[in-house]
Image (cartoon, protein in one colour):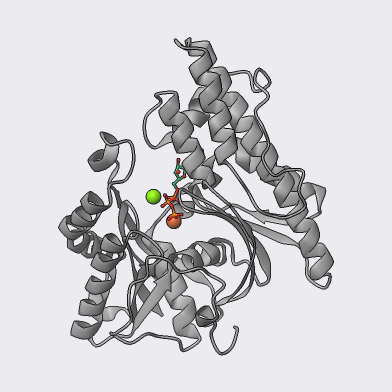
Length: 352
Ligand code: ATP
Ligand code: MG
Ligand code: FE
């Protein structure tokens, strides 16, 4: 079955066509992403109204391009899937409304996809991972552990009580005048820095719960940077490296704890860790996660960066997984700015 997926919940306008065969194996026919980095660059962050307008301007063309690259007519797909939340509501409305119009015009079923579910299921598309597994989502808007038992069957084990990890990278980049998006810039700058020069705090790490907190770390970075004005290039590199080291320490330690909980609560299943979200592209974070998995004897799957950040293929795939279970949505489905994964309405009748 072929599914068109549309993603417009943040600052990527994206569309893709993916296939899912009877056995549950996936394939990507096309995956077109237009990032709005330029539109938002001068503001140092995503401006919701500008994002929504850019989606309006570009989405039709991106969908046509996804069909062209897949060498398919839109009338040949079996369903239309779109992110229905959580996200910036103006953008979500653009994608979801377009999907409704296509579904109505083409007479195809609509699948309203939870963006977090799309991140959560991507590793099944890329690596055929089987349930259950632990997902760590570390993106610009989220930092959480979710136990994924099946499609629609999620249990949140912990999340950030303040900033998301990607957000912390972005804010640190801004403090150090490294530009936006901050994650890649901090990573690059940290290569020349001393990760031990500054002992930044590891918030919440002494507590047993699986939650994160990154705002204290960000504040400590800000205070250090303010104290040393004007910053030399070496200061900037050392601060970036020391921040990244603290972030890796926190994420690695927490992940080890979460995998230990997986082993204790699901002893009959091999422990598996799936990583999602843009921060998964960070090599040091990846290394910390691999070390945590190795320490607990877990398998770790980190999809390629293009599928960890927002994209249409993950939305199409989540749509395909739901479609295979007979779950579709009516044209009256609403867009939702907030939509936690572990609500009962994510549930589907049976698990594949
Ligand atoms: P969400 O999916 O939660 O709605 P989002 O769309 O902003 O949020 P993504 O597109 O998955 O999230 O990821 C973007 C985030 O990932 C940004 O905060 C960015 O700084 C961060 N990021 C990207 N590459 C790296 C990197 N190499 N190191 C650290 N962070 C990175
Ligand atoms: Mg994004
Ligand atoms: Fe995302």
